[in-house]
Length: 305
Image (cartoon, rainbow, N blue to C red; front, side, top):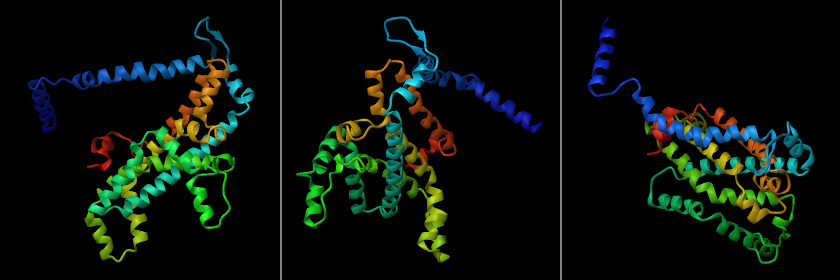
């Protein structure tokens, strides 16, 4: 009875404040309408167009799996672009997260020097990709690049960098890691700094080794921020095209670069097929990270204060 009376009092209080049970739906309605128009409808139309042959002028002709056959069997460099994208994305994600965690542990203490280092590492993120590509293209230059100059200084054999098909992909990945590391560092560092100091002090009193303390306490408690950084890193590297075009092309072709070639050389509706292939990993990674990407963590800002 007391519970029913409490619910009645809450309902009466809400009515006095002019809040009804439909108020939350009215508040999120505009946002959901925008998502329906600009997200869900384009995705559904993308799936629909992938089964048709359409040149934007004439009528749509049902093509069945014809567009998929173009990509998988006619476009011979599709599989190369797919493998390059997988290697590139994996390299960028692993290196970015590893370096972000290491630097976060190093810069955990709030000091003037650490704040300066944080800002310095964040600076490349503010530089346009065109400028970054110009800088790194000069550094990778076979004749006048600073990297080969350093190798020559130590008497080591020179490298062809971007002209070597075996390492060109990793050279482009290094540019992406250098540019975005500062951004992911801030996310991970913010999560690390929200760990209650009492827990770390208790571990020190128990004579817990630094390695054990990191893997048993710091890493699990900072995992929400690390998970968010991993999602951002994955999505950013998956859609990356500027760096590949400006630094690694034509030695390096990834899926976003391949998308331009498909649109230019093949039926326009072969493009939606490639777009869907790029969307599938995004949906999967968001599904796998749903434990950390939820309403509670969003409301808390993933511990970023």
